[in-house]
Image: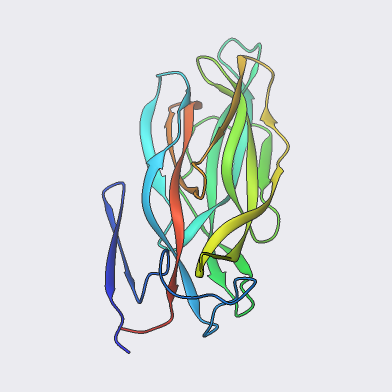
Length: 226
């Protein structure tokens, strides 16, 4: 059966998917399993969270490839120009491809790396979500720069909501912080309910000046071809 072409615009980037979008359609049996055992995860729309940090450096927005979400970050830390406090010197997001198996379980396979930002090098750090989880928020410390970051990860499942198969969160975890104790602590910043991180919007020069996540709504598309 020929699928319906859906164009998804994410921050000005056109993401093309094919098939029937199941955000508000279709029927899922009890427990959220998919009737035909075939579905793809797609992302629609997108917006950035609040941005924390200063106004130095240059702005950069990086988005994961189609059907992928942020699964963690790599980076390095270094004392700032006064040599008194530790700041996040480099950061690079990792993306993972989302899929759904016939039982309704959502799997995530790390695939892509987004561009690295920041120039100085120092001790390395890595904050990666657990198996089949993606980033949904962050917390930390900031002032003129981003001093410290910690990320919240979530595991997703396919659930039966009003007779439709939808993606929902069934558990979260928080990764250890990376950085120092300078600046001021800021409260946790999360993607809107039902959304996951699909990229970053940040400022950087010599190090990370400001940071935010770009979020998008995951949905299901059946396996019908064009």
